[in-house]
Amino acid sequence: MIFTKRLRDGVRRGEITCSIRIWMRPHVRVGNRYRMEQGEVEVDSVLPISFADITPELARASGFKGVVDLLKIAKHGRGENVYLVRFHYVPPSGTLPGPRRRARKK
Figure (cartoon, rainbow, N blue to C red):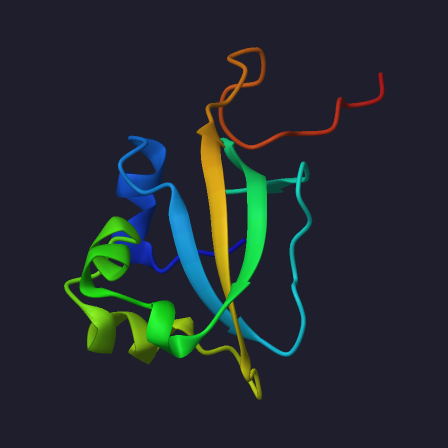
């Protein structure tokens, strides 16, 4: 999952644990992990909802000021279906600091 730059710190701090996405079909699967610059997010649930279900509280829980702010970002391409994606942040393991690199051949 890709997050707009202004949301990434909130995701990493665990303050943002859900996202509204407007897609033709789900682009993520429950249980899968998706890389961020640092760490990953693991999808806990993907629920179809309607536009009427997007409340100001849900928009704020997703890291936005309100519904209008969220809808400016949430639509991806020709999407018509609304999904509530719940996830949790998984920090890097610490064994590989920074970007992963291939070992050099000697």
